[in-house]
Length: 136
Image 1 (cartoon, rainbow, N blue to C red):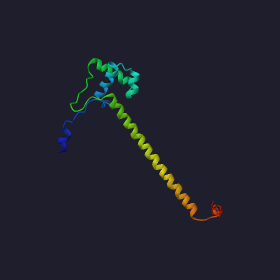
Image 2: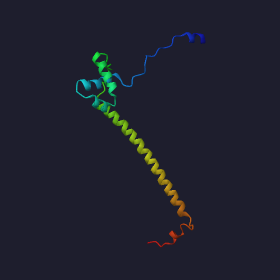
Image 3: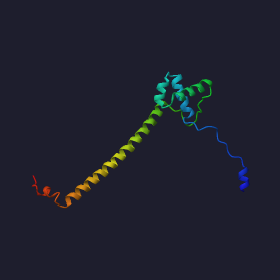
């Protein structure tokens, strides 16, 4: 059995690394630049893509090699959808930060209550003066 496994051909992976962006996304960015007149800088700032990537996509598009693969059940991505997804990511991050701050405040409050409880439960020479003062 071991000999058989050694001589079996392995599945080949495609050469290079997996792309960071989908073909539909690249096509949408190129369309914004070519059709709608968006500049490289605007596209870079809006989509978070480098100028080099944008120019490479434009070269592919102009050679006819960048054609979106339309999926029957999934529409091509839109700028508004992309912005909303980015906003959701930012809001999730902010919620996480607020949750951590809330936990820290709860711990600080608990600690201060415990410290106050410990210091007021026993009359010592340090807190004797506080107990001798009259109530107003």
